[in-house]
Length: 104
Image (cartoon, rainbow, N blue to C red):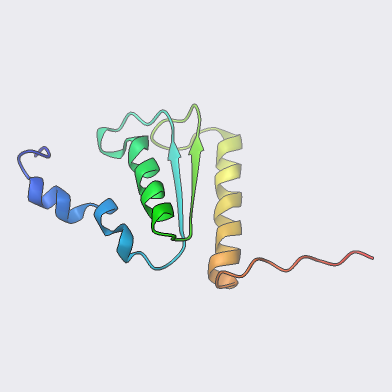
């Protein structure tokens, strides 16, 4: 069914309309060339803008030249590095920036 055939269902399932209920840090990433109808890059941009407007902790990374899933080696490495760094700060560190090593 499309949006106009099931408007209430689509609105009820919309993460954007629940941005104010998100309490934890949210890492968003999206491929800029995503051709999947249901996951347009604009959705991530709007969600990020909503979270920013609400003062929520969020980050958005857009991968150029990628389709629905990240397929290049460089993008894949970058994606994993961002996941690990995000988890280190927002899960292991509970939102505190990682301590920097002191070098004499």
